[in-house]
Image 1 (cartoon, rainbow, N blue to C red):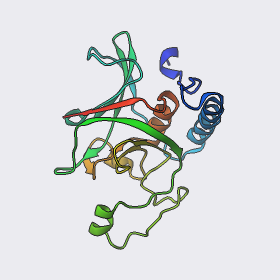
Image 2 (tube, rainbow, N blue to C red):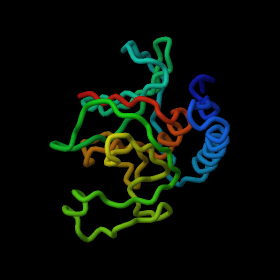
Image 3 (tube, helix red, strand yellow):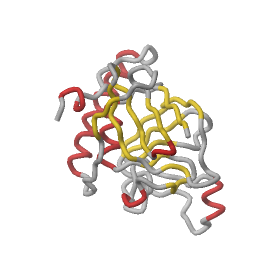
Amino acid sequence: MNESLSQGSAGKVSSIGGFMHLLRSLAASSAARLLAATMPQLEQARELVGFSDAYSSGTVVVKTSERALYYVLGNGKAVRYPVGVGRAGKQWTGTAYINSKQLRPAWSPPAEVKRDKPSLPNVIPGVSPTNPMGAAALTLSGGGEYAIHGTNNPGSVGGFVSYGCIRMYNADVLDLYNRVSWGAPVVVTR
């Protein structure tokens, strides 16, 4: 594997949080690598590709029509991941920012999901095989409704399937988790 493709950005220090953020990032990065090694779902489909769009390095770009997420490396390169995106009427476009990173997060269905599926429990623990968040979640600014996350249904990756979240294979979301920094911009286009 190309060296630049395997390096994460966990060692970067944000301007807010300083040394403690670095320690949390290093601990989370180690935990993500351990989790990736023990996850039963080993699917991954990421690849290093040419990328000429004018986004700065470290930006996440989701192209809904392609059902692809690009992590911009710079110098005309990006890592491309297949993703599941919002179904008809649930898609959105715009810019958000990564405002948290979580490994094996618990999931509480948003009101709209709960209304459509009232039999869902109010909370599904992160370790449950029925948790739709999978191995990790990168939550997005803008109200807490959307995230980039793994999945307990790998067959949904590549489709128009969600209520607006971006779904990834568990191995791929862990790879992205290790690369992306808190506060990184996420641009969602059609």
